[in-house]
Image (cartoon, rainbow, N blue to C red; front, side):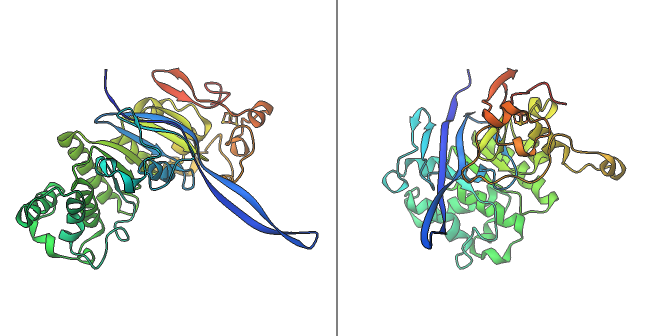
Length: 333
Ligand code: SF4
């Protein structure tokens, strides 16, 4: 049986929000909670990729950042090789900052413009004391640059001298510098041109094969997620609404939201594209602040019933490892 590297169980992350209101001429502070991640569970087998998709604001980046412990979880567990790391502060234990790395969304903003590429990639090597001598560090940096398709001469340059795709390669080399096992790719290709996106995806897949890496691949581009992911999870307003083996989810989507997302992927045929309609989804994503009881998707779902508005549907298996959180799973077209 394949080994589970990461298991997230009932993860919760809420953010406090609020506003000042005037009541009987007195100012009151009203407290709200933004339910960014609400009872999210999934597991990822070693050497595989879980694609996490959804519109912006659905909580997928917060899931990634909470796994990295950049945010402290408000509930649930993050089991890494069976050990709950959810409440281990980064400052007190560097083991998991080495094992778990992140590739950020914006290759323009995530690299310090005043540092050379060697300094950017070498930082993690120094923090974790991975090289004994200056020469060894220099060699390791050159090796990492070559691994991501750059060359050793690039090490003395600055980020502004590179294209977006090259900067993202530097971001990947920086993540690899500490020999991680697990990488959270947070919208790692979103800021790049489509042709460059494919190159970065191919690079990530090659590195995964060569180094046995495990990925959480966060994105809103469904076509790229399909290409790289073994499992796909669809998030809506802080919850996972559908999850399963990628081809199963893409070929037999069951949740109205997943169907809507898949139907909104642009098609190469302009005539077909102009005439098709997206069934099941209307309006905009609702507010995640103090969400109403019942299904979070009910305001946008054309199939919503009384039960949907009263009772939150739970993820349940519909076959082949495919799980859906919808009261009408299998009954909607
Ligand atoms: Fe739509 Fe109801 Fe299913 Fe929610 S539970 S997605 S409202 S049919």
